[in-house]
Structure formats: C-alpha cells, structure tokens
Length: 325
Image 1 (spheres, helix red, strand yellow):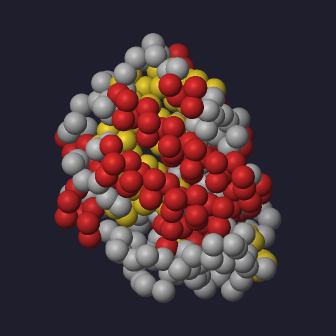
Image 2 (cartoon, one colour):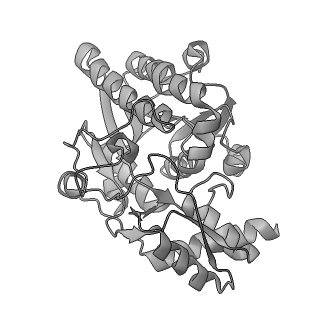
Image 3 (tube, rainbow, N blue to C red):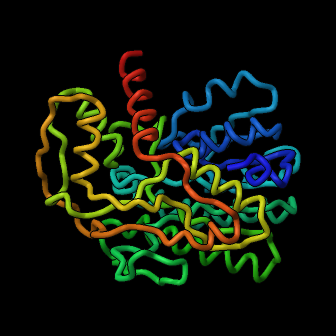
C-alpha cells in the first residue's frame, strides 16, 4: 500500500488507547514514522510496555499508564489531538474471559471517554471493532450489512457485546454531536508482538511447534479463519482514518483456511517434529470466518498484500528470537 494512501491526511498529534498492545503498538510505530507526535495510553492489563520501549526513547512519543475507563485520565492529557484511535480492550479469549467486567467497561465507559476527548478536540475518532460482532455467522463471507448471530449470554458475549455496544455508541455520538467517527471491524490479525499464552491459534501453534510439543487443535480443526498480517491491518486502519468514511468497514484477510491446515503449515515452516493433538472446542467458537472486503477495496483502495508464507515466516522468526532472548 502506498504511503500516500495511509498517510494522506497528515496527523500532527495522535492518541492511541491500548497502544502497548499487539495491534496498538504497531499503530504507534506507524504513526510515529509519519512524523506525528504519539501518546500511548494503556493500563497494561494485557499490553506490554516492551512493545513501545524503543519509542519511549523518542521525544515525540509519550507513554501514559492509565485506564481508558478513567475519564479524568483522558481529559487530563495535555494538548490537543487530531486523531484518537480507541484500541483499548482485551482481545483474546483467555484475556476477556479472565477480565469479563473490565472488557464490558472498556467497551462502554472507555469508548464514551475516548469519544468525548475526540469531540472536545475536534479530532477524528476511530473505533477498533471486531469480526466477533458477527458471532457464529449464518452469512458467508460476512458483509458489513450483516447483523450477526451472537449469543448475548454465552462465554464470549462479554467481548462480542462490548464491541457491538461500542459501535452503537460511536454511531450515536456521530449523529448527536457530529463527532468525526469511523468504525473498523478487524478480522483475525497475526504477527510479531503477539503473546504466546493469549489463547489465539497462531501464537499458540508457533510456540508449541518451536517447543516440539503437540499443537492443540480445537474440535476437528475444520473451522475456518481468514488471517491478516499486522502490517496489512495497520494499513487498512490508517487508510480508513485518513478517509472520510464512517464505516463500519471490514479489514481482514480473504484467504480462508481451516485451523487444522494452519497448524500443519506452521509445523512445516518451523521444521518441527510436533504432531497435532485434538482438544475440546470452545463454546460458541465460530465455524466459518471470512470478511467481504469489497468496501475497503472500493472506498480505500486497500487489500492485504502479505502472503501466508511471508507473514508466518516473519512471525515465526520474531517468536524464535523472543524465546532465545
């Protein structure tokens, strides 16, 4: 993706909530690289300060340890922002099942606080939503017009409904106050800085393969995912931010793969002697997952560019280095 598309709207000062997390830290890197001053706000419940350690040496970057649900913390940040990216939220099943109330709080109160700060500053606001708003979809591939098939009281509901409410709140804020908002629905993203123990397939499989232990595949492994390398996801997020679009807009990979095939590819790429071990499938685990990215392609000129082989090799290389360090 061309730099002009991603940074076609020059940001002077950006706030990234959840900026020490996996995707959030990559956004901080990219925004800093365009010349913006970046403030990263994170309570480190699931993020890691090591993800932004290199940036902390720079005068145009500031890390603030605070919770997005603390209205005073957001109001108290000095200066004005012209971009607010709300990425604060536990995003992996193990994390949001461990922190159910916190997940609901950051989707509701945290989103409201970030919206209020964006509105006060006249900033562009972008909400990180998720493919999980589609639940276990009955439509395939999933278009932005699909309302979803979500169990509102199931174990995953704290994340699904948090994001669905956040979308509704963002939409209402735009309608009532004229806040310049956009909603991006991010599909499964992978790459460097994922945590090995967060319960998601790619880091779990890579860690297991590097350790030479069995790769734990849920169910029969026939459920599908469409993964997108983090660089491509960041391209899509910032292209949406730079546009006049309000969304919601899907950003994700378009090559559908079964979880079992993903495990086998990782075994091959790592040269591991690991085998596959089948385990119980989680409740409400989606059976099929693939975005329709027509809107992103037509409105933003965006499409994922990193192929599976390159993306997985780069991710495996990062994990191998992190384990050795």
